[in-house]
Amino acid sequence: TISGIMVALVALGFSLVYLPTRIFHIAIAGIISITPYICFTALDKNLSLKSAVILSLMVAVLVSILCELINHRYLERKKASHGSHLISSIGLYIVITQFVSMIWGNETMVFAKNNPAFNFSQVVVTRAQVFELLFGFTLLISGFVWLRYSGLGLRYRALADNPIELSLKGCNINHCRIFAFAISGFFAGVASLATAYDVGFEPYGGLHM
Image (cartoon, rainbow, N blue to C red; front, side, top):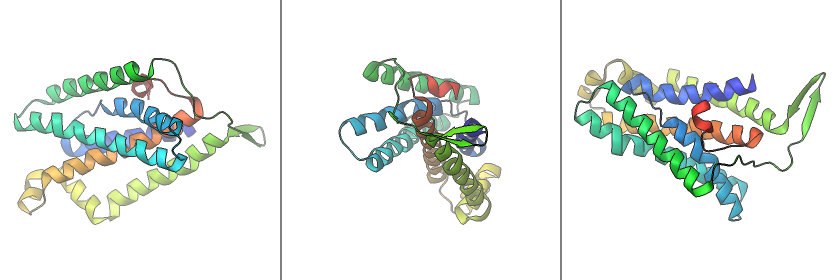
């Protein structure tokens, strides 16, 4: 169940890009890979846990936005096929993971030196898993509520249904696309950090998730 919630967060992040753009955002796997390494390095430089988490999530959002700005937006202007977007996204994933591998190596790393467990009847749950369950579920519900009831969520759904009409009504399509990639990176980063704290992380773990 706990692993399923983390996968659901990644799936939501993936869908937030796919629905309005029809882009298979495979590079999200690279974002999942690099995020915990940024957090680990920040902690190693004596930043507080809160600062390290914020920094790593900012990097996740930035990398996801750059995928749109330097890659998909250019392909969109050239009226490239969906297959071209897919292949280029896979290429971005390879570039990110190889960068991670060159900088930090291929060994599996862990955050928690101490991850106490709690007994509920015959079920054993670690502290990291409790955090994954509560925070992941809350974030999932918040994401769906935002999509369904907020004005920004309404514009986002309109972008998925009829981007031309939305543009004619004065909405900036490019800004909406950037926001979709940003939120996608945020959800992927949260799932990545939560999973990494529980079971560790390595450069190619993002694609498995």
